[in-house]
Amino acid sequence: MTDPATSRPRHLTRPDAVVLRGEEIGTGPSVLLLHAGGEQRQVWAPVMSLLSAAGFRCVAYDQRGHGESGGERTTFAPCAADAGAMVLAEPPGCLVVGASLGGLAALAALADPAVRDRVARLVLVDVVADVDPARARRFLADAGVLDGYTELVDDILAQLPRLRQLTAALDLPIRLVRAGTDTPLSDDDVTRFRDTAPHAAVTEVPQAGHLVARDQPAALAAAIAAECRHLRRERELGERVAARSRVGGS
Image (cartoon, helix red, strand yellow):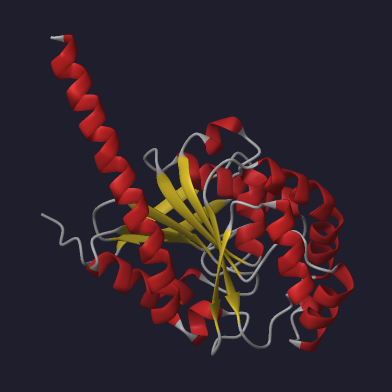
């Protein structure tokens, strides 16, 4: 029997023959983690370790054009489609966590009703569709990221109005985990996000920069674990209601 604390390899072959490589660890309710542009799935390793020890199953892939995955990272639509495929490969009722590019890809993927039906909760890590495009571009340029991702960044920024509409239409619980320093998000961006999604909750990690998983993995894991506990309670309640229905109908 495989030790659940041991990482197990995962892969997805996409319609364009690109292979996305990933891993999973743990058992229990599923958490799918989507990394930021320029990162790799290993950025989630400390978070995955903490969550799996708390009784949750974690899955993370290298996004296309990153790490061990194939493909190019020039346009946004394939990233969003990949995120949808990752969700559809998971059991219904998973929690999706997306950082930066990963969060926007998750939002776009949730436009597909089949994807939405499988997601119970969404955690956005220092990213919203309400970000000021000029501020985001300056932040990425100052971080030295823009040069290798110009086409992808241009495409994403052009998609922000549609992503805002998708955010407003989402009927699932959303939590924004916001960095405290070195972030592309301003207070005004977060206010607009709250206006767009009034049901969303916001957690700030004061000591973290934009890459919260690198700077404060324990604090990020704690915020995700809180959402996981909600997910577990909702699942247990659903199971109890279903059991009572079966008894009442017998």
